[in-house]
Image (cartoon, rainbow, N blue to C red):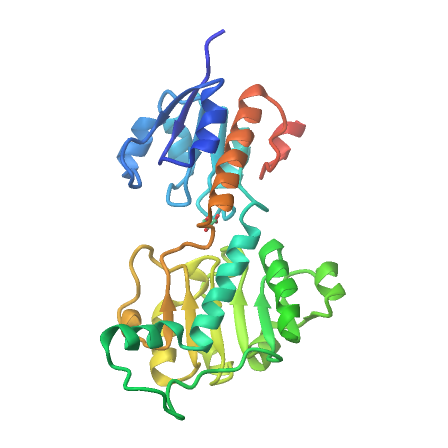
Length: 324
Ligand code: DGY
């Protein structure tokens, strides 16, 4: 029996490739860059299965180009790049990579929170440039974290991990989520409206998916309702924040600071953001630990192999296609 053909749109860790190579003919984008749209559509023409990235748009045009496709596995937990309804209409299973990157992403959100609160990047720069002239009582004063209120926008796996870690800092926790999360309530977290989250939080960390409902919810109106001493952290998806409005809020002191790992128009940043000393800016590295990225590679491969066999993939996004 001939081996299925799999295309991987950008090199992923070997842990995943090895699983695929054991049973499939695997082709990997030879260059370490995202494919252009035309390259992607051409590359998947003969593929029975594809592993793609959050930068690949998986929509009707993609499915038209990939006529042999039996399944698509996203190498990401976020799946706003996939038109899941279209995949379901075509009865093509699609999957993502939850769980394996939960702790890595929550840890990075904490790294950003502390980096902004205690001005870690700014003070590191002062040391490197030789600007520091010795200890001073009024230098580089930052914000307290312990005992301050943590607001979580989104209370899925990563929001919950963030809340668990917050126990160590004795932080009261508020969360804003479409539905109550009993595991959050067990931690003593209180579900509140978006208005209350904005008004009462000292730190807000975004952990929601990007959907039409969450796009641009953090805009000028939202920043004006936050505490002027508050810090906003985003490790989820950039467009949840209206980035131009954030730059204005950081400049005008509507909020104290922001820690960002994701951007509205990646890899670009809004004009003026790079000049904001009260922002810490990272290049979308929430899941960038060895265990998380290996876990994502293995899970994406397991999902795709199950799809190719006609079995139920471990983390399928459209189980309806199997039930019919
Ligand atoms: C995801 O998985 O959605 C992250 O943004 C990248 O790991």
